[in-house]
Amino acid sequence: MLKKIALVLFAIFVIIQFFRIDKTNPEVIIENDFINVVNPPEEIATIIKTSCYDCHSNTSKYPWYSNVAPISWWLKDHINEAREELNFSEWETYNIAKKINILEEAIEEIEEGEMPLYPYKISHSSAKLNVNQIKLLMDFLKNLKINYEEEAQAYLDELNKEEKKGNLRLNNGSKWIANPETITGINNMIAILGNPVEEERVILYVARGQQLMEEFKLLVANCTMTGEAHDQLHNYISPLKEKIELLSNCEETTACDLTSLDILRFLNDFNNYFEGEKNS
Image (cartoon, rainbow, N blue to C red; front, side, top):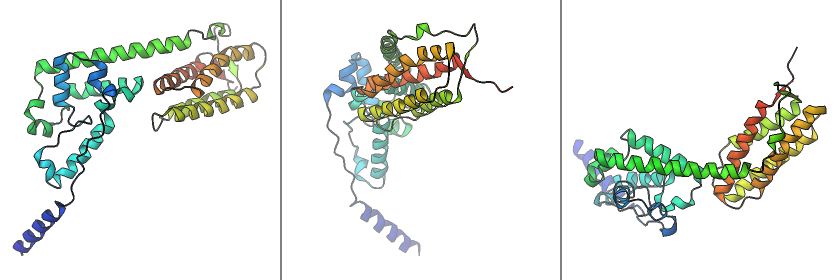
């Protein structure tokens, strides 16, 4: 009985060897590659290429066991998932917000010893990082993250340079009372921006800007506020309208993403100046 089971298992093993994985690497566009774009010191570049590029780039080198199923299937799935999370060959196609998020996660995983993965280090001894290499890499990634954060902040500062919110003020230290429809409109816009964009494509950001503009028009149409409260709301929504128009006409994913973040920040500021009518 055991002999028959062994023969069946062996036959299955032989058969699955005919189901080969595709080892063709996607095209590498050098202008988008992390090393080319960031131009790190040679030692840092060597560390990243040795310990990361096999899984997180379009230059994967498949080892001998990639010819043996089902290990080959697991390996291919792992590389596909790794590229989806971070592909150094496509670094420059990411917007600044995504770059910052990737660097933050990479720093955390390296600090916790989760990257490179343990199985990879077993079969690739050169990928193991010593204490000095980890420190060098961590310092570099943290500084790079700071640079991107400063770049993002500079862009947001530029967006806000002409902001008209300077005329907006409180009601003798208290918030202005806003009608329910206005509060609903603001919350609807926050909800729209709260859902992540499925793909980083300009057309999707533009569509989101158009959604926001529809909500903005409803907010204006349904506003019943009067007097000074209405005037202060106008001081608030004038720059909001300009920001939404900017998103509706954005032409580059980084600018689109940062404009979205700026609008969300501005919408969240609404509650610092307005509130709903309190029930007696």
